[in-house]
Image 1 (tube, helix red, strand yellow):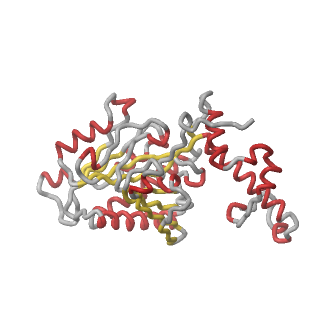
Image 2 (cartoon, rainbow, N blue to C red; image 1 turned 120 degrees about the vertical axis):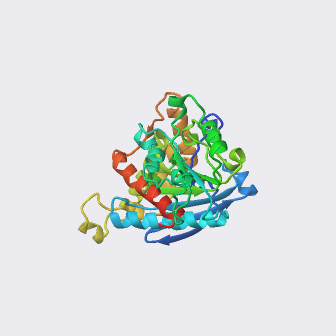
Image 3 (cartoon, rainbow, N blue to C red; image 1 turned 180 degrees about the vertical axis):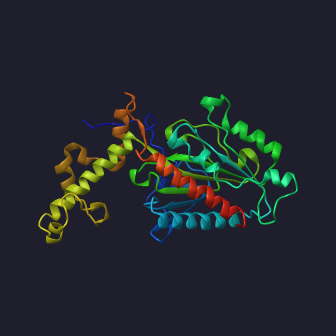
Length: 336
């Protein structure tokens, strides 16, 4: 009997535009210092296919930021891409900016926004006193907290502040959710479309966007969490790749020089045959990746086991990420 999955009930969603794009969409990509930069403009046609707003999306993918050189390279790339977007949006050096750090400071994977604010050079008070140096932009910042602790819709707080201080544009920073283990803490997304806080974990709040605030809104985010569905789905994919690679290279003399279990098969060009997948996984091997993901989500969600998960070293990584974003924003917005 054919298994039917109710897609409307267990809808898969991601905060990253690059994960939601259909495979036939061309993406502008380049690699600098082992950092992959992908750019896409979502127009009316693409917008109809995915749940993303029309606008520019920039994705920066990287590896180890615990290494100082890699961290500085990622920071440099982030600064360059943000400056280019500001220029594309016709934002002038003299335009004032309100920076908003979304999230919960007490929850480490959700503290990206508030802790990035701690690293910013804030100048609005100096402007009010007439003491602002010409090399510094007028910047104000706030971490409005989350609705669970304030009882107030975050977008309402931001809308009220915006009406009071009248910034020329807004930058919103938030932790995101991803559909890939490989992108957790290793991806920065920059977009000029604004943001729906909490949407990646199914807790969608009111949007923070140009449509709401009548000024440009740039959203910057890093995926710091994923769900159990993604972990299981990716594990099945890795299991298949590992099985295929091991089977085809069991007699490869080069592998005899490598400690058993240390071969990074993900970096190998592996063509997985459908027959091998079926041989390893049985009936599950007949499903596509998307069908597998839907089935796992359908299995875990009703019983409350589709947990949101973050890596064990998240405290240390958040420090590095907030350094990249905070100090990167300082250099992109000020002439320092």
